[in-house]
Amino acid sequence: DTAVSQTPKYLVTQMGNDKSIKCEQNLGHDTMYWYKQDSKKFLKIMFSYNNKELIINETVPNRFSPKSPDKAHLNLHINSLELGDSAVYFCASSQAVKYVYEQYFGPGTRLTVT
Amino acid sequence: AQTVTQSQPEMSVQEAETVTLSCTYDTSESNYYLFWYKQPPSRQMILVIRQEAYKQQNATENRFSVNFQKAAKSFSLKISDSQLGDTAMYFCAFMKQVTSGTYKYIFGTGTRLKVLA
Image 1 (tube, helix red, strand yellow):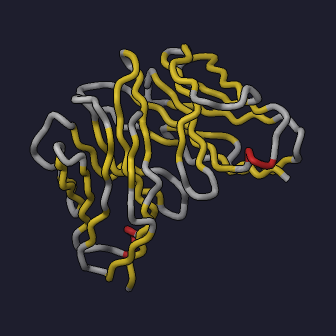
Image 2: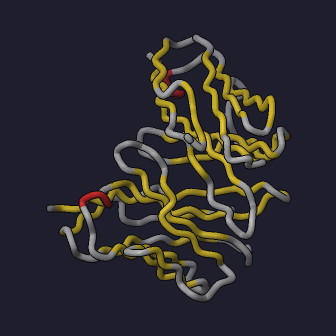
Image 3: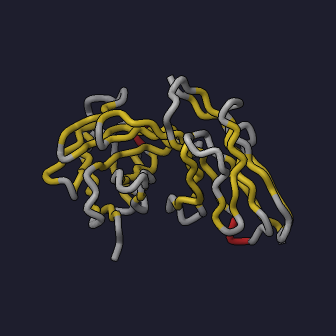
């Protein structure tokens, strides 16, 4: 019954490695997002896809590459991980239906780079 | 550019009392939406309440209500009869349309609320 799921929930890896985080939503939403929440809890949008098309691409290092194989999935691949990439990454989805615009968030993935 | 400011990094309130969390925003848009999200220690982001900018009436959801002052660009959250389970980070968020079907959300820096027994 999970609306927005992410895997893994925790990820510990070393600098220089490449890792992916997967996100799936079963709400039938057209739009999905990736956010980064830093150690000070600041939540900042990274990317947004609408029907598999990249719509929002904030100032994010090109080591981060989102991929949307279909509108229910939005994965985040990170190359050459750095210490500063340590954060919690949230996936979210939304759909503009009958003036309801709120986002539904996944449980987050805590990434620790050592 | 839109900004969202939450000027209270931390607050505390006694159980059963009322607390108000402040949020101000800056925008030149006329049509937008505002939200309050709650993030308990479990880190799950949970929608608390939403407000459409074109509505003058303040939104209410059970013990949660907002004071929306559009001219002042203020959107505060009032929690009545505070409960221990209300302990969480609270984020104010501003939403505007980017394209048809895609909306950009800008979050404030959060207010950490602790409800004391």
